[in-house]
Every structure is written in C-alpha cells, then in structure tokens.
Length: 340
Image (cartoon, rainbow, N blue to C red; front, side, top):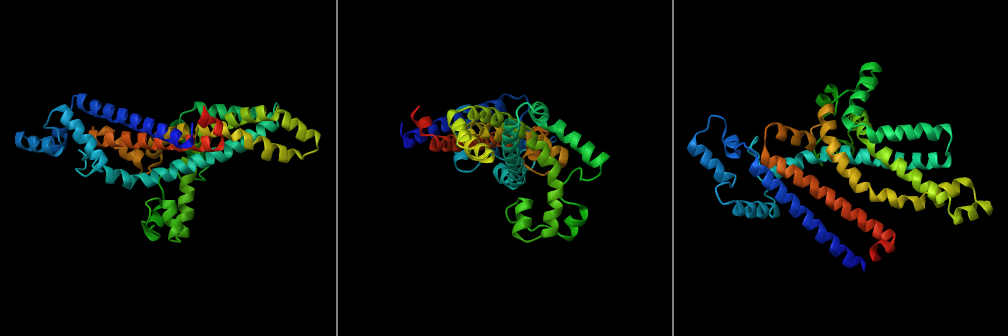
C-alpha cells in the first residue's frame, strides 16, 4: 500500500470518527431533560421569548433537520450559541484555547524529554537502586490522577515550602504593572514576542506546578515504554557487535539503542495528548488557569449544551488529527507500517 493510499484511508477513518462524535453529541444534547430554549431565554421567560429562543437555537424543526443544520453549521464555522453567554461558541473556544495548548504542550514536551531520558537511564542501569526508584516514580505517575498530583504539589511547594505560587498565571504586581500584550493568546509566547521579560519570568514560576502535575502521566508512560524498548534493543546482535568492536558505551546507548526505541513511544503520543487535554480540565480549575478546561467545566455546571457539544467535538478533532499525524510519522519512519 502506497503512502498516498494509506493517507486516504486514514483520512476516511478520521471523517467517520468525527461523524460518530457529532451524532453522539447531538443525541445526548437532545435527550437531556432540561430545555435548552428555556435556559437560553432565562428563568423568568414566557412563551414568546422561549419560542424566539427555539428559532435562534434552531430547535423548531424535526430532528433530522436539526442535525443537518447542526452539521452544516459545523462546516461553516457556526458551532452553536452559548446558553450561558449568548455568544457564538467557536470564537469563545478559540479565545480560551491558547492558554490550554500552552499548558498541554509544555507538559507533553517535558514528559517526552524526561520520560525518554529516564527510560534510557534505567535501562542502562537495570537492577540498580536508581532503576528501582525511577520505576516506582513511573508507576506513581501513571496511577495517580492529575488532580491529586496537583493538590499534593500545592501542599508541598506552596504551603509547606512556600517556594512556588499556588494558583494563577501572574502575580498581582506583575499583572498590574507589566501586563502582557495580546498577540497569540498564550501568555508565555506573548511575553516572549513582546519582550516582556518581567512577565515572562513571573509566568514561568506560575507554570511550574501545573506543568509538573500534568506531565506526571506522560513521563511515567514514556519512561516505561522507553525502558522496555531500550532493554529489547540492547539485547540485539548489532549491539553486541558494537560492544565487541569497542564502541563507547554512551554511543551505544544514546545513538544506536535509543534511536531504535523511539517508535513505540510515538505510537502513544496521540493517547497522551488526549489524556493531557482531559487532565487540563482539572488542572486549570485547581490552578485557576482560564483555558478551555475552565470554559468546558463552567459550561457543564451551567448545562450549556451547545458549549459542551462544541468542546467535546473540538477535543475529538484535536485527538484524531494528532493521531493521524503520528501514524503518518511512523509510516514515514518505517515503510513496513504502510505496507501492512
């Protein structure tokens, strides 16, 4: 199978998955007991106002017409109107998204780098004390939920040691005297682009705890997979040959064995991204980050069905697109994947 045909097949699966998600979110929003029109119009609204709300929300036609209108709106960038804010949902999501992406990608990058490095280290020192300690750390990172890790970090680093801030993105003094100009919506990038070094250093301090809490799971997963793949690679004949020829140990570990152990790690990047986005919902609430997780949580608490549907679909789009890119990267690195 050629790479082009492989791409076509994967895109077809992507469209099918998104179609299924759109159907599920649409059905779930229609079977809940609360009436979205009443929520949109307000508690004291009467008949005419509620009927007007039904027209605005496109709830006045048969279900199949509502679904076709819903899908058509998605294709044209109309993802619904929030019952809580009465604003278009998609612009709201795009406003909150950069903050979440900053947190998620920082945690994923840290998890990948730390996980691969620790996996190589523990594989090279199999059976030693550091291997035992790091394996316990990996199991804890995978097993403990992100919100529990976040609370532990707050108690330890803020309450007990008082070395890092507990919540927020900037200190009050920096937010008032050194505000960050809006460029991308991500505070880290905006402070860097505009040269606001005071805000940048302050924001980095506030990023430490949420990023570490969110990075615990990907670090544990990548470390365990890297260690297993490294141990398998170190037992191959070409590694034995390299050792017999006197190749330096560092070269064998980090150039030969590690390079051939990254394939299994790439396969779980998409899953880790999905976990990180869901985990960010809790992390943003705990650390008071105004991202898409906070927006989604507030939508759930207020029964804002259009916003809930849009956030769910948006996360699904990110998940399937990242998985597609990961599959293509693996297929490009290993042509046997394409032909299988």
